[in-house]
Length: 255
Length: 255
Image (cartoon, rainbow over all chains, first blue to last red; front, side):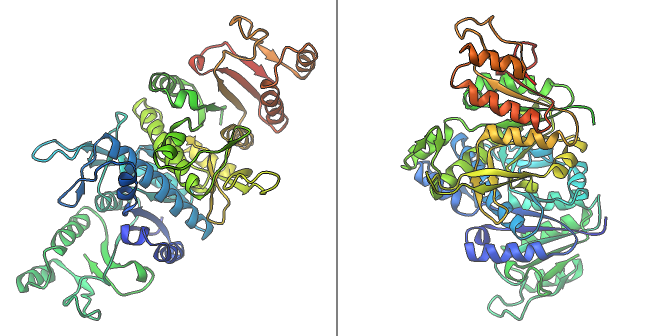
């Protein structure tokens, strides 16, 4: 196999029909083997509200009780995933929509209830690269939502960024892999007010300097830390760029 | 490849946790390559009601407007499909949940709005046996819900019995295929009140006689007609049996 690109796209794109249509066209046009990981967007919150289920978020994570697990399974693995798959198929891309339970690709472990009980939330423990490789070899383009399973029959709600990085690490055992995080900005910027200030490349040395200079803000630090962890685990490079510029050169490459 | 078994299971099993758990165990134990097709059950009607969407059925078919399409996509392709897949994985069966859009396996054509406008309802036009064969060869067990797509980006609600028979016909180009319809009774019966009156085998000749004698009732005629059509299209045999007896011998074989 030649090269695999794993793309993570978030709720801001998934929730916006015009952005999603453009993204689907661009993703379908990406050369080589590829995998998409999508977030859920606000649809789950809307469905919860319509059903009278209270949405509880702690530090940006959805507390997932039994009813909420059903809601996110319906929305992420059903509605959002199948909409994206149908659109990709129409664009000539042989997408196959998956939760982590499908073909047992992603197993996770339910998070301990202390210090915070998030309910049916799972941290990824294993990605089956053999199954992934079989799909890629058959010319399929896996499209993952962030629903996983514990291997014992229980579905779990996982973090889509975490799914993307775990899938990219597994893919890198099959072929050289690039992980692309679509972002609301054109990349990691020296000055968020200046769209031309995208930092094209961040190495470990550059990162130390950027942190020392206070250029990288609080929100970016965990993202860049995660990117370096993926690179240390075998991913060739991690790119942070705008979903609207998926096929273009602008973005920040971390390696 | 040796032999493929395609099993269709309906809402009566899918809706009942105890029956479903037993069915999952039995299906996982079936030898050889296999494919599952599941109906939706009453969950879609319940979700529609909770969301204030009126459920309209005409001749047993759900009228599928835009909102109802979202509901059935969430329930069939999301909740029900992933629950079954997670349970099968836990039982050691390498299930992969699919709608017809996934890997473009099942394409359908939206039904004409005359004489009855069913909305987003699709009649199956094509099953891609190459994709099916690739999954089977990789040791995966496809689990289909009855959501399909038109290949142009629109999801469609199809009939699960029709999905099962179309998938079985496509599978029969890959390897000899048996199609099993799980039924609420132990098979086609001479006397519905007598559980020992299951007719073990119906040939064309036997069928003519049974109809002439008035033994086969109105509801069974389209089922048996469909079974003969599947056999004429390449399926080795069609078996009608109880879901509770999936691994047993009792049932009616049509060939």
